[in-house]
Length: 408
Image (cartoon, rainbow, N blue to C red; front, side, top):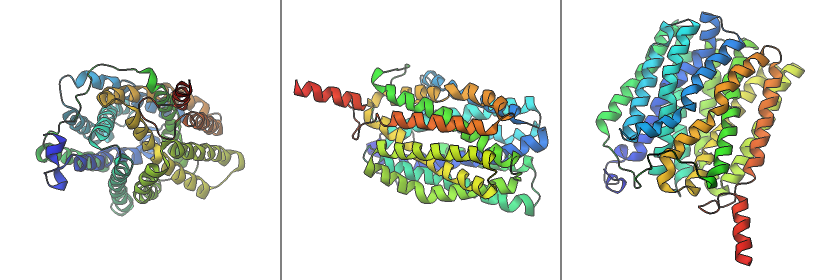
């Protein structure tokens, strides 16, 4: 069914509604896995910083290989691949607690990561193809809010049930993954196959004019890994957070995202991607520097928790990078470039957690100082985004060249 024909469907069966439903389905499995991970590996498997670093590096290998999505798209539609990937994630999360060893976690984590990263690659592509450019920032904000609402539901139930009903790791992993699996089946049965307006290229594409987007993706992946791997690990290892306390912290994060993500989308539409990303990277540099200060100055748990919430909220601005690419891209490049960008995003992610795991056991503060430096590099790159990006005006250099050519 074409996107034009889909406008005649009830609102809940339209392409944007499917994106929202899938955005809500994914966190039920992934956020459950993520909320329990640090406590599970420390309490049940006996992990230290080196072990968690290796596990997270292994988890990022499928992200590095996301370019394989291009080959799969030769045999199946993006929409179908997205649902298959979501089901893969769901099943892997369901069986996680049944293999409480380092080797077992490597296997289940690898399977869940294939599902997660391939879903995210396809999902990003579908968002940029199905959502009009003029509405993209605000709609993406609402999609982030929907995902946050699903995470909030999962975490709320976890906070209530973990202590009150003495839930086990196995039960919670089965419930979170199972909920995602049920929604995937519903999406398969209720939604038609939507045709994107532009037939996507089925080969790998690297274009010189996208170089700034590639660079920003690389830095985002490196910086994000430090937050994902070590910020939450710090809350458990340094401050002794229990499962329900970590989950409560996540609850605060997702409540903030539900409230502010749509507002952020509206703000990006008003101020533009350049200013939004500059604000994000400046804030992240300050937050990461403050994380290091926890170890230098002995700041307490309240400071650590506040920084974690601010950090998570700033990362919600990252969808400005998606809309920047949407504005400069050839519409036929979106699917293959989403795969290439995901691979670039995960180049550092494959080796950085394991490498920094060794640094963590000697100097945790230096891990966060490095992250602050990465945020500053991202800030410098964001300065190269023009105020109104479009094909031929991908960077400020392209704008300056165009002005000089006009003068001549």
